[in-house]
Length: 65
Length: 408
Image 1: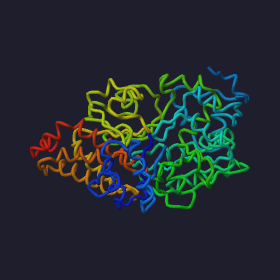
Image 2: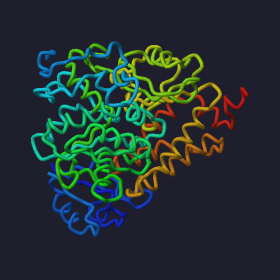
Image 3: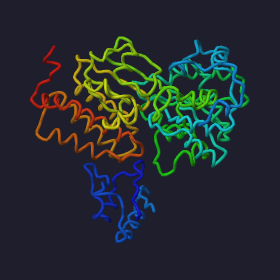
Image 4: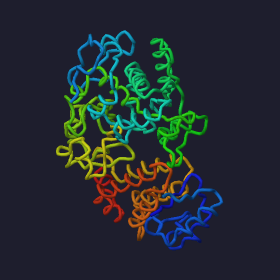
C-alpha cells in the first residue's frame, strides 16, 4: 500500500489535498491537512491521491510506495 | 568478542581506570592529551570495534554509531561533521568536553573520517570560546587536512542533523523534510556523518583500548560512560562523567545532589520526561528502565526539581520556551506549540476553564508527528510527562490552588 508524505516545510494549508481526499484527510485547527486515520492510501483511492499530489501548489505532497 | 590484540598500534599508555575516561586529562594541551591517552591509534577495522563496543550516539537519539558509519562508508567520498551545537539549554557537556579535551574529539573525528573514507571534516559549535579552543587545538596538531570549524546559531533545533548540514551548505540552519537523509546527501551533496562530539571522543577511546575495555563499565544493553549535565536544585551543578546503569538516586548523589530534596528529575532534557522522586532509587539510567516513563538518557541532561518549585509551573515555562524555539517552518508546530503551551500555562496559573485538560491532550495529539523534525513530538512527549507526573498538582490547580505556593 502506498502512503502520503507531507513536507511540512512546504505545506501552507492551501487545502486542495483535503478537498480531493476527504476519505483520508481533514483540516486541522489551522487549515493544515490532518489524517483521519493513517496516511496509508488504499488502492481504491490511489488515483485520487496522485491527483492530490499533482495539484498541490507548493509541491508539498508525495505518494510513497 | 574483539580484544586488545585487534588494535594494532603499540599502546604505550594504560587506559584510564574507573568511570573518569573522557575527562581524564588534566588540561587541554596536546602534550597532556598524549601523555594521558597515548598517540593516535591505527585500528584495523574501526567500525567493527565500535559495533562490538556497542557505542551509541550521545547527541540524544542514541543511534548505533557503527551502523551510521557503515551507511556512509558504503557510499564513499563522504563528509564527517562533529556536532557540538548543543542547543539544549540545560546541557553543558559538549562545550565542557570541547574545552577540556578538544584533542580527544579531534582524534575521534579523524578516526571516523579515515574509517568511512572522508576527506572533509567539520566541527560546529554555537560558542565563540569553543570555536577558538578547537581552532587552537587543530593548529597544535598540524593535521594535513585540518578540521573546519563553523558557527551555528544558538537555538534549540540547530543541532538536528539536517539543520547542521543546511548551515554548512550556506543555508539557514533549520531542519529539512526527512525524505532524503544526510547519509545519502548531506554537506555539498555528499554522504555525511553528523556525530555528536562526545560520541567521537568515545570513538577515540575504543580505537585505543578496544570494546572489552569500553564495556568494563555500564551495562550490556548500554555500555560505557556518558556525560551528564546536572542542573537545577543542587548545590553542585555541572558536568559529570558517569557509567550507564546506576540508579538515578546514586547518580545524583555522586554529583553531590541530594535525592531527598527533590520532587522530580527531568531526564533527557526538554524533550525528555519527568521521573518522580519516589522512583529515583529504583530507576536505573538505562533504556529499558526509562522506557516506561517514555524517557531516555538522551544527551545526558538531568534537571532537578526541588520542593520549593511547582512542577506544573516549571513545565509550562519549558513548554513556552520550546514553542518559541520552533524553526518557524511547519504549520502544525508554528501554531500548535504556542497553543499547547498557552493551555498548560493557563492551567499552571490557575485560570481553569472547562475542558482545559482535554485541550492540552488534544493539542498534544495534533502536533505529534506533524513536522520536518521531532521538535513537535519531543515537546508533546514532555507535556504528556508533565501532565502525568504532576497529575495531583493539576487537580489542585483546577481548584485554583497550588501545593507549593500553599506551603510557603
